[in-house]
Image (tube, rainbow, N blue to C red; front, side, top):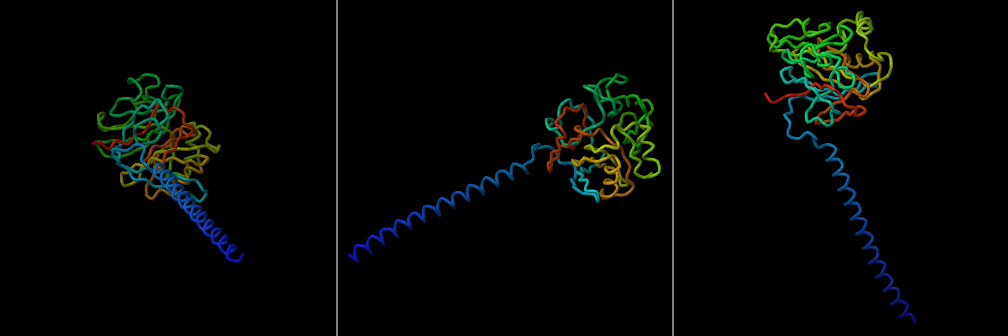
Length: 276
């Protein structure tokens, strides 16, 4: 009787050990599968959706004391190309950020490359030849003199340029980063939309070394908070620049991050063109 009991117990132990082995094997497979899934998700998140494009910029992410997060692309002005978009930037095969203000398919901010507006003919409505309604801050790169300026103008004819075949002009609203006593009055005079409301924001600034910074924040912020974050965290001196279109139009294509805004179509973008 004892011998039979011992034999039955041995069989039960053997069966239990087999079941333990099966459970352990299943757990190992589950862990391996989960790890593989997490790896693939991470790899897909980090994978450059614009693979193969020239990477002619440096990327930086910062956070201000007011918790305004900035994504920045710094690059040479020679690697900038103002261009039409007409779709959400995520659908454009180019690095860069959104440009100026627009209504439907009409560009309401200046966007000129080498005396040619990006969205139509010179002096055409919505072409990018004008800052519609108001004279507004326009960031100008004068390629011949290799100098930047922000000029408050209404149309391409008013731009002060050394060589009309070697420049770009991007319209927006003056930031007056070097003039704390002037910027609020300038923003009001140039009619920055929703300056005191918390919105997504974008901007374009230059520094005293001749570098451009394309900047977008995914943080809902006022114009003052966005401007302050730029002054606090852009690692450069002599900054000056312009506010660009904001809210859902604030979009960025970068290898490191995609900022889709609200995925609306934008008429114009500031693209990175590193093919030269």
